[in-house]
Image (cartoon, rainbow over the protein chains, first blue to last red):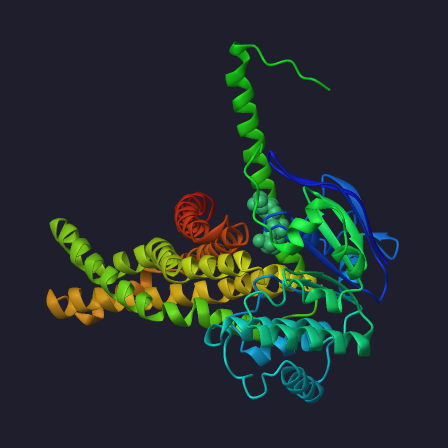
Length: 247
Length: 264
Ligand SMILES: Nc1ncnc2c1ncn2[C@@H]1O[C@H](COP(=O)(O)OP(=O)(O)OP(=O)(O)O)[C@@H](O)[C@H]1O
Ligand SMILES: [Mg+2]
């Protein structure tokens, strides 16, 4: 269970998070939606302990990751898998090397087992035979899929996805969503996903949370969000253009 | 908590205070960074292949430039020192004069400056790009220490390669001096090398060795630190790279003077 309590974060004068509360149930897929630049990535970076808030807490099964350091923080992170918005692949390694890296360095598996698991993971994301290419040599969509394979290959308990499907073609978007669902059924991880894929994410989310002006404006099952009377949510999921300021 | 605005007369003082605190803070982070790196060097697991890779990156890739600059430095030295010594009728001491200048001073300093330009800047840019593309964050959230994977191997490789590069620079430089002094200006080969042997002590060589060793730490420390703390975007990487080269070069010269006053 992940509990975000009254999280506040400002960069200089810019208030990004203004007392954000969010609960993520163990084993659920929670999708955070919201305007570009609204602070979704900033929220994720607090959950994985890369940013420290000005105020508030992030409890992961009772441990406050905003106050943990060093070994204690690593202990929590060992349960994590993270798909960064830009992929964050190591560009000095091949795609297969990227997927193998956490198996070898984090789980310390033997070379033979690493090889079979890497092969399986790449096949799962539809990249069999592409392992020997470097990240700079594959397309943006392929990089995303390698990043997903790298995050999930260690079978983590908690996975954070920052826009895993942005920039992919519609067929791939659905393929990746089904892949995530399938792996979720198998591994039962807790997922926190940032996504702009509306309406597709309503099919895979257990809970949808709408981030607006530094807080969660509305949270609930997809059906509830889709039927929400809240004008902010309605405008966002219908993609209505902004009204002029002060109108 | 509402603070009253400072009286106008005190504002410069306030600004100086802020600036001083920022400088001390930055120095603290800079020092802590080296402390962390040394900590990971001394504790397992040791990333052997990363270390080998860094030796290739820092050492092997600087080979050509070291050979080239070392050779020409020795030749220039041979020429200039010869014309100076001739005035005193003591051109027989060309060998030791060239060798001592190279071994004690020019070898360590110029080799370090060359490696900084060739490999140090690349190190900063590489780590800086890893930072802005979140590759360092990716390591961190895998519960793996980026310092262990990226910084410690570079510093260790600096310790190994800088003395080697310096030795190479010295050797090629002495040969360059030989080319000019003996082949061009007609000094006898026996005089050039013979006098060298009787004047160059082990302590001279050790001076050069300690200098190159410390330059190895300084350059890799500065360059990895600047990469790690890079600002935003391509501009940030460009600035970090320039800063790393400038700061490394200044520190090399300052530290060289300091070592020169301390070592025999
Ligand atoms: N390290 C930082 N320093 C300063 N400002 C930052 C930093 N990180 C994020 N911000 C600011 O915080 C705001 C929120 O950024 P964030 O990346 O979280 O947006 P987002 O909701 O993920 O947007 P997108 O959907 O486009 O990815 C932005 O205005 C950004 O400029
Ligand atoms: Mg984002």
